Length: 614
Image (cartoon, rainbow, N blue to C red; front, side, top):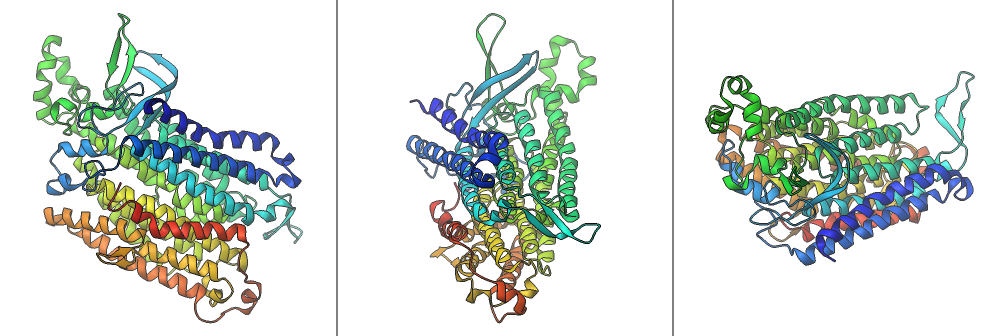
């Protein structure tokens, strides 16, 4: 079967499997075994199937397009490092901004990246407006499918043990009723896996989307799912407030995203990533350029160029006073005068605003630490492979359209975010909040890397971070499950009774700080963080006035090592500080330990399988 046909089928099925699970549990969840016990296995079977399909697509892709030095994009930002105000062809060639992206499921040709695009179904088409459910598949799409489905599989298995209390009636000791008694409610085991399945479906929808309209729809659906999951214990005021806070703060960012979408739509008349074909008035197929082709046209060497539509839109007054026959001849003159560049800047910053909210960047990072009120499996998924990853992924996907000015904004927002979050993590005593601020800081790393032109470095760290951060959160859940407290001041000495949890969490800590033997071997974070440091240093050397960006990366790395080792030693080393907690401490059941061991292995070897980038 042709790859352009096989990939949409495989990834399309992988995308729909969690939706099928959601529908089944929605209607039949309570009837799936005793108290809905089998809902966990239905959801797990669905996401495992998605993982298998994603792996088949991954192998098929590698078979047809072997990884080589010419395509891994390890030096994505070299062109930008020299002059942040200069456009270079390599920027398009390496991350998806060329006219070679074929519509209708055909592979790209020429010097651009290899990608497939097309539509499954057209919802509406009239005039300039075209709404469709489509796909855009390249190496980034396939890699993200594998990462999301793999981590979601581990979390589903872990959650089947962690959430077992919800199989029976629950007495919530954190909620006191007016009569002085604690809240007694039915368990919600099926409902949890129902929402988890919809969450995975929404994230995969963002990854496979072929246009920004489709991205925005699933972007909002991810936000809705997060509201359900963060507020799972909605009777608790803290959980209810946290869910509302996450929802409202993300809507602030999404307002900016809508402005960016409207700027693109109003000026260019399309939200498609790649070129598309449609029947013309004479019955022959007509190719309509996508965003990547418009902003980085092949006939201009894939260099960043303000599209004609934006120039005309910005120079509307001049167009109105110019004879129609002469407009086309004056567009280049108006472009040279700067018309339209501000509109491309607004579009880029607008899209980035949505990413600021979703990926918890300054100043909209305030919702993420409070999201810890949800069950620990939710925290692990939100902080590793789904919600917060969506913002970084979208910046990476939209990278060809971003001007150097927008990239500089992204870099400084990332630098501020990573420093503020790291300093807060230094003094936090709640084990999950330390990890939450750690996530915010690491997301700042990724954004800074993308901002200084390190496309591969930023997205490589997104992948490695997904493995070790999901591991760290699941380990923290194992500790909380055993000790019934989040306060590290009451822990200590747990390595004696929880050896597997302590060992795997130590691996996660070493991975996130980037431990390794220079020039010999290291854990996954060693390779991804080193690539970010190298990119930031290269950028600082070429742009000395922005050297603070490199110092932010280096300083943030030092702070990360301090607060992660502080977390581990406060939790597992020394003697018990609270004997009541020590009496309850025990190793988690096998169904919870096995995902920890699997993720620990990947936290070590992910950098080995992806040396230096993609």
